[in-house]
Length: 236
Image (cartoon, one colour):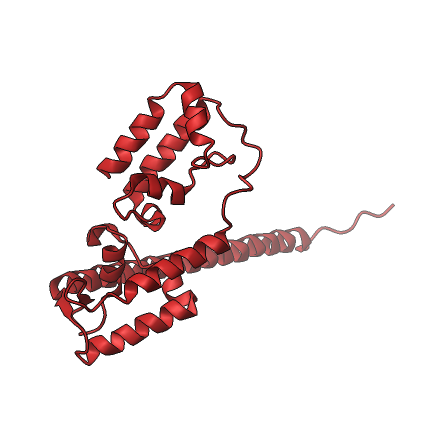
């Protein structure tokens, strides 16, 4: 966080011409956003672009700096930087880096995090890889399951953890707290859904009752109009 704030502060402190030259090196795209990979490279310290995507506080710092730079009118927001790597290329790069790092997990230097269930604690694994505090990680990346090689590598490591085939570190208390939070969140969501369903049913019942009341009122009105008065019809 401190390294990112210092770097963004230095950038925003530059005059317009200097800042334009700095950013046209590929750090800033023409769509008005930072190239996160190049941003991570500038910070160094094994910083990964995935860290910016996963950490809300860092993302807010970057968004704020992007807005300040766009406000200075240094770039035309009329398209993306053609030289920037595609999402597919970035995804493959992220996968390759993660898989390479994953081969070191389970060693004395990088013990595999284990949850209270005795399984691989994947959220803690991602926190370690992305250099984030566990509390800052809301969930693991979706590509943990969507990318086949990553999914298989994680499952293989999980088997080794269960079989005591790798060096591990027990994070029982953290994982219990995590499960409790997830359970509480799930319960809250279920309760809210049940409440919404009940309100919808009440609304539907009220609409039906109102429709029946309006229909009954009209029927009464028609009956009143058609009741004989007892008077003889007027003859001409």
